[in-house]
Length: 66
Image (cartoon, rainbow, N blue to C red):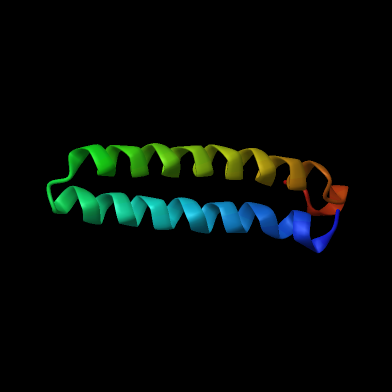
């Protein structure tokens, strides 16, 4: 697996964290609809990051797997 493929889960986790923070901020301003959409986006990023992380873990050498 290339370095780019291995960094993708980390990037997705970062995007999810940013979307969660943005959703919290927008929610605090009273814009519930925008906050809900940002929360949905954060969930999509989180789910995709988890899938990609599992893919990377499966391709890791046996000595590195838990």
